[in-house]
Length: 268
Image: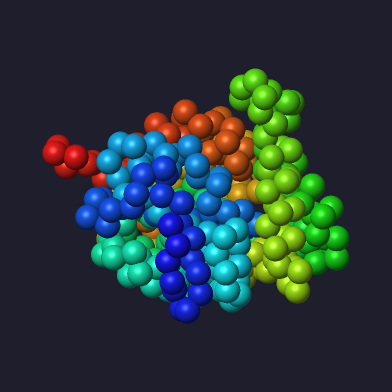
């Protein structure tokens, strides 16, 4: 589904069902150098169970046009405007990595806040930032390795025909190539690295909150959630996976998400 936000096209995958703003809405927000496709399985499940689904492409990513936004805070404000354009007053906000910080910033309009593969501060090592700036293709290979547990390195994990690392690398390269005038990898990582407003954003959260973490995550360490846990008092799930939980542990991820989402009305 295409919407117009700030005069530019904003794309949202609706899970294979026409979007109905009258249904309880779930908005999925992707992370750095990703797009809506990382949410495909979860988005389809939600849409076919009776939720209205908006799996977003952030500006300058995937099928959304316009310039990438300058900060996590600006991205949270943009998310509010996208919900307005979709005719949605409130939504469960589900964000992965950088997207989890954006969901936190937008949580005034959340019926539930689900932060996946998150940490705060979400600092990026100087070595990785430098490589992202100077050799982004090499940095993509580094991040792909760090984002997946060793168990998922082999082809045909988690099932025949799958190659998680190859698919993740291809997606990042494609998203990076969409912005020839901008190093989108460096841009997105700097958004994570410089974000410092989580305490103020957490103080505005009035909905149930869930953290879904990868116990083997080397990108956003599950040890780096103490501040979020203190501020948000969330339910916490730790799954046997790396940073790319949606791909590595799809069944466990769905089970945790189902517990986090608002229940559908009985008539749905």
